[in-house]
Amino acid sequence: MRQSFKRLSIIFAVLYSVNIHAEDLTFPTVDCVITPSKVIEISAAVPGVVEALYVDRTQPVSKGQLLGELKADVEKANVRLAQARTEMRSELSAEQVNLKYDRLQSSRVNQLAERQLASSQNLDEAARIKQVTYWRLKQAEETLKLRELELTRSQAQLEEKKVYSTINGLVAERYKNEGEYVEEEPIFRLVQLNPLYIETVFPMGYYGKIHKGMTATIYPEIDQEKGYSVSVDLIDSLGDAASGTFGVRLILDNADHQIPAGLKCFLQLDETQAQPAEPNIKQEAPSSKKEVAVGKVSTGQLKKR
Image (tube, rainbow, N blue to C red; front, side, top):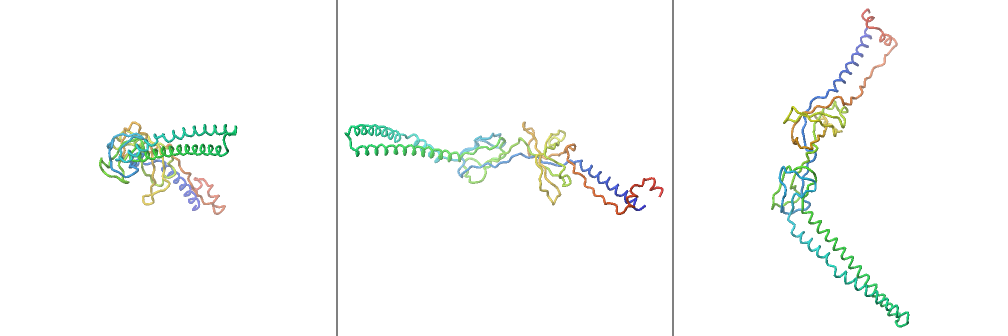
């Protein structure tokens, strides 16, 4: 009799564990926060004095757009100087003319030498002059290339005085004004609002049941009656032992910029897409043949006993 009740207790324990597993598939409604997908602090590449800022807070910006410039009088002068030096081709032209003349002169000396009207010394001298002129022309060409590289460097130094947007978004904050000196501190804070990120946490008991691509619905605090479809983008592999939770990030398409960032929201996961873990139920093997026989007794026989 005692062994029969022990057997029944094992059966009830199994059924109870399955019920708990089924309840785990019901995800709770959790709080969440709507955040920008990117937050970037934009600063100049070099220190300097702010000369002009072309955008202000809340203005939309596009990737590559010029946002501001630092004072760059010296850099602009260097660009003009380097540009003028690259246009100075008189030395190159002169050496081209000299080489053409020296080649003709060398050809004439060779013709005279064939008729024995010029000595070998005259031949050597003509060849030497031609070779020297050739290398002078090469030197002039190399000098021109160096000047072009100096122009490129001057233009790059001038570009360092300009501040460009690196994303499509809007200006969240403008920290500086014209005339202020900046070093490493940012000038603008830019945010990208398409897509938006939804940050939330779940108890560790749900770890492994939420997967990337799983859909959910959020309800922003400004309009809790209207839901927006989102999908899981990232699941933290490291939980928080103090709170017993792990982080989940979802992504929301916001191409029309209807939803602002910085809002609280409520989130409900789609339970039909959950990945339940397989229940791991251990049953003790019967210690004797007698327990096996009792396990096969029907409920009516137990009552009769």
